Length: 203
Image (cartoon, rainbow, N blue to C red; front, side, top):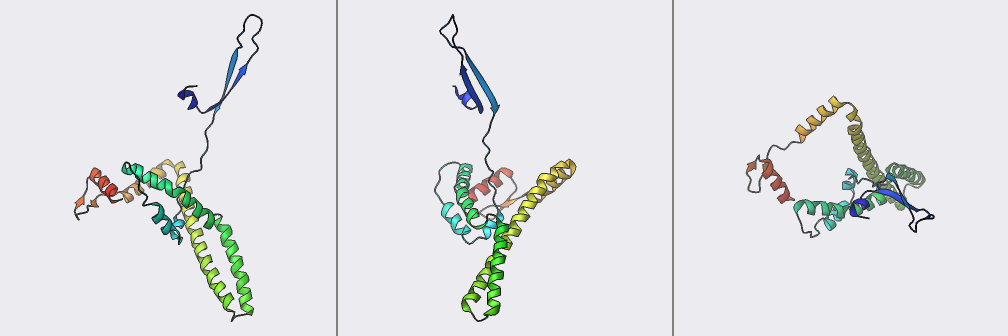
C-alpha cells in the first residue's frame, strides 16, 4: 500500500478466489468500504475554570515550559500542554455541575437541620460555613457554565437566519476590532502588521 492508500481512510477487505483449472494464480477481489473518520471530542475552554483556586497554580506550572519554534508553534504547544490538566480539573471539580449543586444543597440542608438542634456545636458551625461556601462557588460555576453554553447554542442556532446572523457578526466584528495598539515605548500604531508583531512579542 502506498501513502495515498493509507491516507484514504476507508476500510478494505481482500478475497482470494480459487485458481481454477487452467491457472496457478488466484484471482483477487478488493472490497473498499465507506470512508471512516475517527471522531474526536472538541476541546472547549470553560470560563468557570478560571475561578477555581487551583487554576492559577496550574497555569503557572505549565505555561513557562521552554519551547523552541515559531511564536504560533510555541503558543499552540503550550495550549496543548494545558489541555490534559484542564480536563482533569474539570473532571474532579466541575463534571456534572448541576448534580454537584444538588448534592451540595442536600448536604447543607442536613447539616443545618442538625445545627438547628445543637446551635453551639463548633464542628457543625464550621461545617455549615464550609458547605455554604462550597455551594456558593458551585452555583456560581453552574451559572457561568450555562451562560457560556447558552451563548454557544445561540450562535449556532441563529445561523438559520442569514441576514440576522451576518448583521450580528458584523456588529461583533466592529465591537472586537482593535484600531490601534500601544507599543512598548508608549507610542500608538495603527498598522495591522505591526499590531500583530506587538501582540506576538508581548505574549
